[in-house]
Length: 361
Image 1 (cartoon, rainbow, N blue to C red):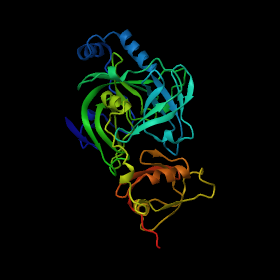
Image 2: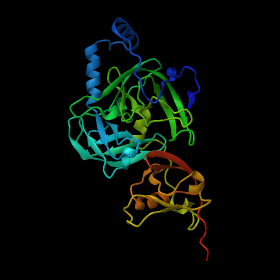
Image 3: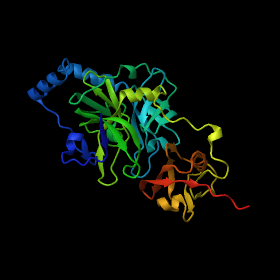
Image 4: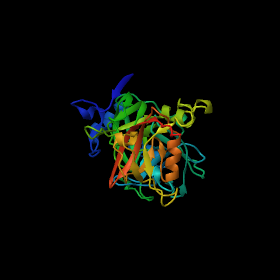
């Protein structure tokens, strides 16, 4: 197993599917070269009709997701139908922060979704709609791929596909399966586990949550949350492997269980953040920062007055009440990402939480 520490310092970045700004097109062979390569890498799939069938199969099992946007963060994404009763896999994103999360199925039906569970390790979320979804990806039948295998990625990149139009498809090969170590302060999100690096362009708005499949239509993985290096501004094209997705959906992904009540921090010794919110409009008002205590974790991280808190860790924050609920779960000593909106800019800061100071008697 190889270990990948992002960003990759490689002169041949294309080898590992790194693209500047997520733009460009994947290298695709044409004519006799394409047919010869396809026959060599994927026996039995050289028939163009079979490839069209595989794309159609995947199209019918991907949904469009629409929610909250902020600044340059887009309010749309893609999702994978993974059960006959309305379970949808998606990637974490700001679109989850809207008052409602709308799902548009391939047949045009529209539903509101609720969150079942999240995985901070995989930056994934499992959603549920009240609908029958007989066409879905069976995760137990997903495919494992090797370096050099052909795959295609399908997603609502840039939100260009209306209900009547098919999702975008990008063709490429698997570069490597590697262990990802996306660290706080180096990337804007954490990730822990394996990834599939692909040379198909998947790092565009709207693509996260899309499907990566073999040329036979077997699911290989899900396009993950966009990773962008803080230092180099480069992005990575990757998928979360299907075996890891299956464990997450089945609740077997080894997420740390919540601490039992007797291990909770004693009263007066919980996490200290140092933010006071502007609450004149009530608890359902947006979580705008009214003031930051000097010397507090928030002050050290660079939180400012009038910042809008959008998320704390993996908890979406839409109101002052949700902010208080998220903060109440934090513990001293944690290094927690706070997603903020400052003017028209979305940024992540990391608060190293301290023990809550005792109130003077």
